[in-house]
Image (cartoon, rainbow, N blue to C red; front, side):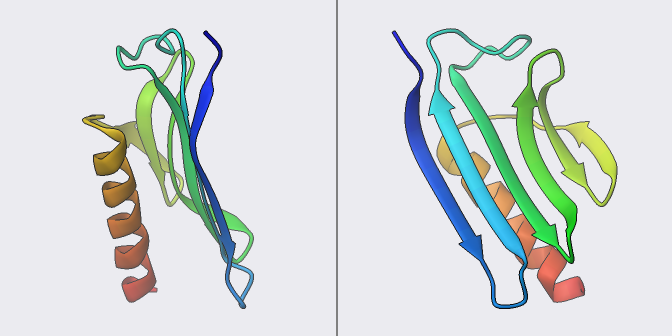
Length: 95
């Protein structure tokens, strides 16, 4: 079985901010994850990644926020997208 693209969304705002979400269903979990998804969700403002959710091999599910990295508890793709969008909206309100 090959990886199957679940979603790929990319939006560039008039001010050049970038929001991109890519999620794949993979045949084997990406170690140390136990789920069968590979994902990268990113929000870039003023040319700098301010929010990122991904599950890089060897690191597992994690979040990048304003230069800091912390673990993320993956529940589902829907919850992942919801959490990411909520974080982006919160950041936009505060900046």
